[in-house]
Image 1 (tube, rainbow, N blue to C red):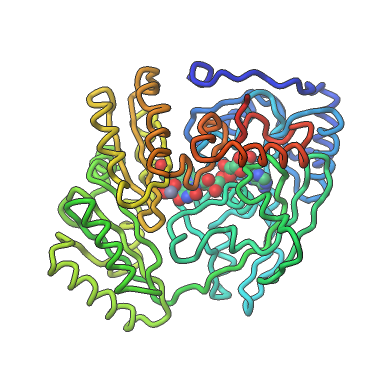
Image 2 (cartoon, protein in one colour):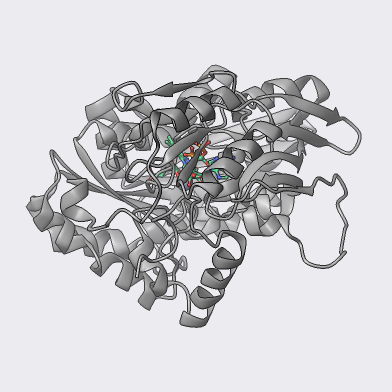
Length: 474
Ligand code: FAD
Ligand code: 2HG
Ligand code: ZN
């Protein structure tokens, strides 16, 4: 279905000879793989939708090795796709044709942790869970959290400007990444390593790489401002009757919980059905049209608990919330979080997933799910809505047993045009990658896209870094 859905032609890039392959492998002391079959897992994305035919995957261990690889590829006009944990959801992390895969998994050293400033300096291949494990003894944690934390890597997180479950509290990576080292398409190492919070010395070059999805350079190292590890964590699961009440609840949570609110997430009833059908997961109270997961992070458990209790009493007595429960231990909290965090995994069991990640003003937020359900009717298995209410970020996912061109054409471009008409964003947090390039114009002005092209041209004039991604092909 990749070929059926996306009509794209291979660029005029150099082809690897076996001498080239051997030379590139020698640059990384043989750490890599050769052969399309051997690269099966690296050639296909997490959603198993975008599949390339690369014959070479390299796993450098140092910035110098990344630089030597790019220098050679640049001189031979060979295209390269940067790859971290390969958990990206827009097909950006895999080759489209025979691009060389530069996988950062072995660049996994944590170089420095400063417990006073809370800054960590780490290589791009560090897995998010691994970083948190190394930070915990210093009473620190990464300022982002997402369902893919067991595999996604720092470089991939920064390259996608990943949002996740706690952005409403800890802010985006654009604010929390303090410094960076990156390698340009021609092998030049750009050193913007900095651990200062304030540094207004001209253009902030590292911002170009944040959210650029591997099209402007390869991130090799970064310094990140961590958050204090909270000593008091509470989690509540609340059932709600209508989306209007979810909205009210969010506003109340901000008012009543204030600075301790760390996440406000929702799933709809179709999500609950999917979790039960596909993963045998059940909610802690009777299913309802909507369920909300609210988390607090703080440093004083009795203060936090009192605040949460007063808030819950109030929203239950005025009918905003139908029923609910609070996790009493970390095991229960993990199970409750699972209902929200495992949605992406759960949907994959249906067969084919049409995945949309959009920003919509909260007044119109859930309307899109209703509109799409009416439009698609019985032609699909399910159409579910969930996501980061606190960031106005809706995840709307539609499933069929196998790819259907008819369903696809009923969804796209309709869904993106609808989002654009309500002044939303066609990609809230996952990026544009390979799958969304033709819809970029619905969220960006022609002048802004022209600036993006100028920047790409200046930084990678031969267009060897992650071609066919982010920018529209024509
Ligand atoms: P990859 O998938 O390997 O790559 C992603 C992109 O970054 C590609 O374009 C790739 O070329 C580029 N890239 C990777 N490493 C580098 C590098 N070192 N330098 C330059 N470019 C690079 N995203 C969210 O924003 N919020 C979520 O809540 C969220 N939850 C998720 C839950 C699940 C279960 C899954 C599977 C994915 C989720 N994602 C979420 C998607 C998400 O973008 C990532 O999981 C993560 O940020 C990607 O990291 P990665 O290391 O897997 O990168
Ligand atoms: C999440 O928030 C991820 O769970 C994945 O961003 C969203 O599956 C999705 O649509
Ligand atoms: Zn998300």
